[in-house]
Picture 1 (cartoon, rainbow, N blue to C red):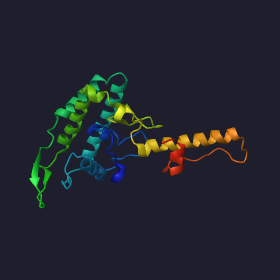
Picture 2: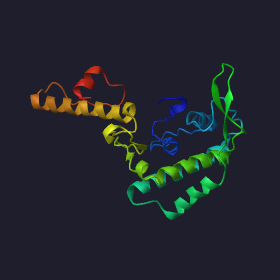
Picture 3: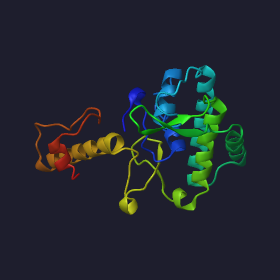
Picture 4: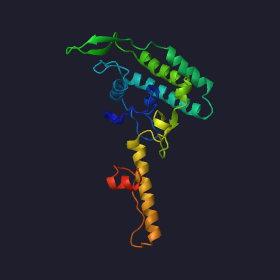
Length: 221
């Protein structure tokens, strides 16, 4: 799912979506308060239209710090187990605030919509993300669905709920598309080498951009 600021919400859990705002590249998806406001709304932590005037550089620093903690804890749990000190930090974040309580209110068109009973505070929203992480890591079924993206240089972890547990990438449109294009180019190079065509050199250039219908067919999508 694409939203402004290149934010993504396709990892399957709230805490993993926060971790996905840093994917190991030089790009910072939480570059400022505006991006954090967009993430809070897009992630569903606050209903659309909730005033977030209080979000500032302090909030940004706290969410980035929790993000770094989540990345460490999740990746270490996938390997050999998270450090006890990091788990203590996660538990502290979960206990440091109270997530905002929602209420059901009647909109002008008669439909029910979600609203907050009080303005959200930073500690409460951080606690909601931390509690989601604790719920994920202590749920044996959900833990078994955690996967590391197979995309080259991608560090994202996602929840694989696909049929047959065959999902390989954090996003089929991003890492999956890059792999399909790369695979097509590798096959093209092999065919050219086998045909002994000296007039055509190897295909070069960045492995990015949308894949064409012909490339999808050749890559065996």
